Image 1 (tube, rainbow, N blue to C red):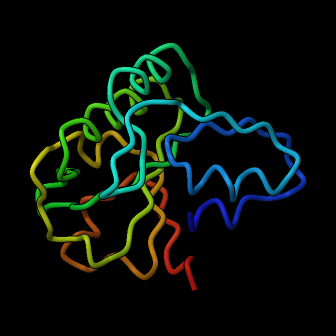
Image 2 (tube, one colour):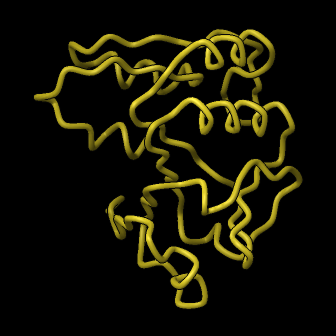
Length: 149
């Protein structure tokens, strides 16, 4: 949601999301917005499952934004749900540039299901400066820090 709020209004975009909440924010502009479909997961208010996976599998993206629940000390990206992890892996596989958007409180956390590593991402967007113990892990990754304020 934070990344969507910062989207430049002078670009012509086609947005795809599995978030009904994000759909309403993205639809405020004149851009084309598509919803993946799928089973609603109340914990994250997102659509997951075979329908959402098929939509992503059959699409190609220039830039994909993903949230994470944990970034471990070894650079593992994780989320607590298998269906969400599967969808995130598909987005990463079908995207030219992968951006992870996260709060710095997620650093040092590890959730149930790994879906990738920092080696898989091109851009990291955070609410504050990346903590020192993690900075070396992001060598070669574009950092956009302190952006949610």
